[in-house]
Amino acid sequence: MSAHTRVVVTGLGLVTPLGTDVASTWQAVLAGKSGVRALHEDWAVDLSSKVAGAIDADLSGVLDKVAARRMDRSTQFAVVAAKQAVADADVLANVDPIRLGVAFGTGIGGLSTVMQQMQILNERGPDRVNPLTVPMIMPNAAAALIELEIGAQAGAHAPVSACATSAEAIAWGTQMIRDNRADVVVVGGTEAVINRLAMAAFSAMRAMSTRNDDPATASRPYDLGRDGFVMSEGAGALVLERLTHATARGANIYAEIAGFGMTSDAHHIAAPDPAGAGAARAMLAAVVDAGATTTDVLHLNAHATSTPLGDIAEAAAVRKAFGSHTDQIAVTAPKSSIGHTLGGAGAIESILTIMSIINKQIPRTINISDFDSKVNLDVVINEHRAISNSEILALNNSFGFGGHNVCVAIRNY
Amino acid sequence: MNTEEVMREMAVILDEVAGVAADQVAMDKSFTDDLEVDSLSMVEVVMAAEDKFGVKIPDEEVKNLRTVGDAVNFIVKSA
Image (tube, rainbow over all chains, first blue to last red; front, side, top):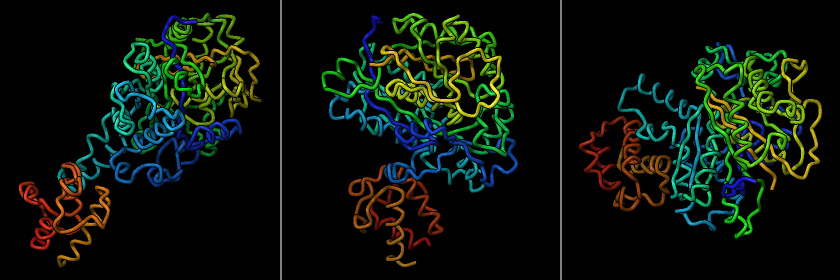
């Protein structure tokens, strides 16, 4: 056991292409469903990647109408997920607002709002630009709007580290409680950039799948035919709570945030370090921070975005960190179902990791028809893997452009 | 447009932009004190009114528009 103040998870919230809450998303994952669809919108006609995990559900009933029109879509998802999480934790009436914090990020933020306002600026002039543009596009908008929604006064932080963002938010929230700045912190991340510019820009990097004729199988981590990630949107929110605070109020405890590790590659602005040294250090740091040893790790929820280079680099990093114990770690890649929600991924996938722990079932990775033998991992492929151990330590990896490596260690409670 | 028509459209704008219920909107109501329209929302209201009524409401005029009636009268006069 670690010497740190213990931090547990008492609330969960999800908005994903698979479902607009935790239960529906988890059921869809277990059913092997894909949240990815063809982009039939007019603006996508000439894009090279025309598939995405778009959220088509109507969330207008969940948010106040005026509040919603003052939020970028990414912030709307964030606030919806955070509201679910705090309701699930039943915590707002049971925490001093000055001991309630927020750590919530986004990888890109309000790009869709930027594009809308740019168009208004160009077509109608400067005096038609929405006066709420700045608070809508600032990268801390989600953190700030959640802070306002729940009345959090211990501090609201907005980590930004591309696709590692919301894993980093979990780390920051955990640290806020360890540092005794807060008893409860709402953490997570969000993204909503299924728009013409983001799709074109990621495609220009040759990072995205062009399997346009078969959207549901376009995101295929570890499959030989993988050809890039699939853009997706959504948000995940968790309520982190000091263990003693949670037990004192009789809260339902899902799991424990046992530790985290964060490193940087100093290798390349977008490509992963092929040796995976930084990623391996992040995983090892998370294990140490959890007061565990490498052989305690049973499960890895991988970053695995379905890019040719990235999936291999992560697999190499896992092997570097865990050596022969790697064969004992059951790996799943939820982006096969959800696609890549960028800044939302770390939180969404940590929630799926928690669901795996409490249900003692690791969901299979879908869309692997021709397993890439260069991936030297025990990937859960054909059927879900039951967990029989009573002590479960699982890791969730998230890596971001810029060489950000974040690993969250989650233990059953 | 006459006063009554502008008033009706202003109520729609206030509902959409600032969440003010239509039955709260009256000529003598102050935007800030009665309807809790903050300064950013007021900019939105002004922009929406300019679009709707095809008028220009200069910034230096906005500070004189204390009540809904002030705005409605200005718009009727300008349109």
